[in-house]
Length: 203
Image (cartoon, rainbow, N blue to C red; front, side, top):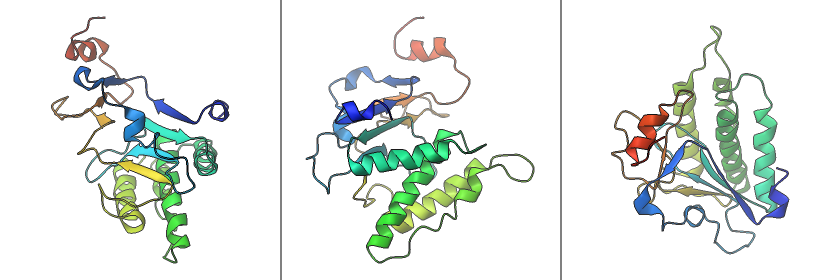
C-alpha cells in the first residue's frame, strides 16, 4: 500500500512464478488491463479468472492507483488482518472480489452479495479449513453477481480469460503441459531443482 501512490499501477507477482520463455513478448500488465484508458469506467484491478474446478489463486494481480483500486486494496488488507483465514491473503483477496461484485450488483438494482461464503474462510469446528467448500461457494457467487467464467462483467475488476492468455497457471498433476504465459508452483513445499530443470536452468 505504501508503494501504490508513487505509480500508476502495481503488478504483484508471487516469487514462485516462471515465465514461459516463448512468452517474453507478451505484456502481462496489458493482459490485466494496465494500458486501458485511465477513465472512471476502466477496471482498477486485474486478475486471472477461475472457473470450476480450478484452484483460486491471487499469485498475479494488478492494482491501479485509482479510487477504486485503493478501495479494493483497503478491503483486502482489512481482511488479511483477520485471524486464521484461508492462506491469509488468499481468502481475503477472494472475498474482496465477491464484495466488489456484490457492490456493483446492488448499484444495478440487483440482489447484492450477502457474505455467505465468508463462513468458509475460517476453520470448521474441528479446526480444519474447508478450502474446497469456499471455492465452490465462490464459483456460485461470482457467477451470480458477475456472470459465467470467461465472460464476467465488472466495472472494477478485469477478469483475464486464461483460455486466451493464462498469466497465473497453478501447476497441478499435469505439470506444465497446460499452455500458459506464467506457471505458478504454488504451495509451501518447493522442489527448486525440478522447477528450474523444467525451464532449462540449473541451481
